[in-house]
Image (cartoon, rainbow, N blue to C red; front, side, top):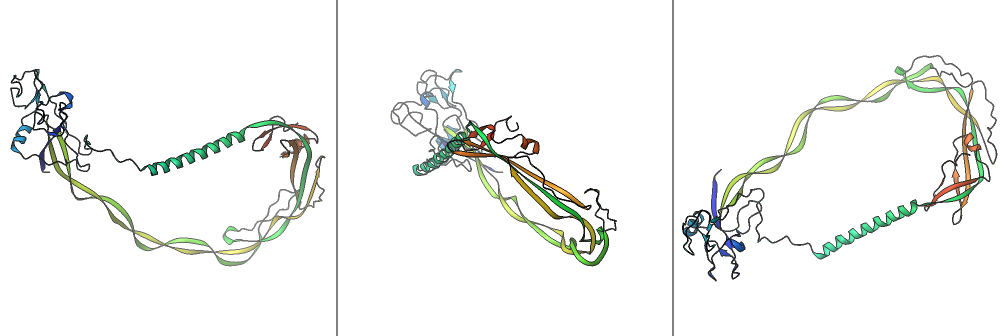
Length: 389
C-alpha cells in the first residue's frame, strides 16, 4: 500500500532562562541565546500528542525548506569544547568554531514506534479522577460488605465454641410395630406383548412365593407412547457473525531523526467489521406419531397389608406386639427408640438420642449420668465413647 511521510518538528525547553516550547530549528534560545546542549534534558524533544487509534501526530507537518533541510542533515552532534549542538552535516561547531572530532557525542536516533500501541507523549494529561461522591459511595458499600462478613465470621466463631456439661437420662422410650400382610389374588393391567402365562406359587413361612400371570382377558388397543417419524425436510437457519473488510483505516509509525525532528510514515490498512449473516441448511423434519399396543387385564398375586399392631412404653425392655399370622401371611416389623437426656445450661434443656438397635437401647438406664458437649448455639452432642454403656 502507498505510504505517506511527513516531518514533525519537536520542541525543547531552555534550562538557563526556563523558556519553553522552543522549535527544534532554533539551536540557541531566542530569549537568552544559550546554545542547546545535551545536558539538562534540553535535547529531549516533545513531539506533541498522537491519535490513539491511528498513531498519527496531531501536529502539522513541516513544509519550510530550511526546516526540512535541517531535518535531513543527519543526527546532531555535540561539541567537545562548548557542548553546543550542531547539524549532522556540519564539520565545525557553530558556537565556538571547534572542529568535530571522533569523540564528539551524537544525539541518538529513535526506533519506530509500533502502530498498535502509539506512545503517549509527556504532555498528555492524566485521565480524570472519578467524582468524590462516586468513590465515597463505592467505599461505603465496600465497608458495609466487610462489616457484614466480619459479623457473620464472628458469629460462626462464637457459635462453634463449646463447653462441657453433665446430663442425666430422664426416660427411655420405645415403639414397636408389626404389620401383617397376606399373599392375595389381585387384578392388574399390562401390555399383552409383555405378558406370558406363568403359574403362581404360594409362600411358605412368608417367603418363596411366585406372583404368576393367569386369566389374561379384556384386551383392547391403547396408546402406549409416541415416536418421531420423518416428515419431509425444512430449511433451518442460524444467525452467525464473521469479520469482513469494510474499508481502510490509517495507521502511522514515527521515528526520531536524532536532530529534533521526527519522521512519520502513514499507510492505509484494511479495516474489518463484524457482519451478521444467516447460515442455512436443509434438515429432516419430524412429527410425533402415536404408538398403540394391546392392554389386557390379568390375575396375579401380591402382598397386601391387612392388619397391624403398635405397642410403646418407657423405662423398660422393649417387646413385640402379639399378632397371629396365617399360612399365606408374613409379618413385617418396625422399631424406634429414644433416650431423653436432661441437662442444665442457663435453664433446663433436653437432648434426644436415638439408638439404632435394641442392644444399644438397652445400654441406657434412667438416672444415668451422661457427659455432653454443648456449643453456644445450643446444640448438644454426647461425648465420644459415652453413647453406649
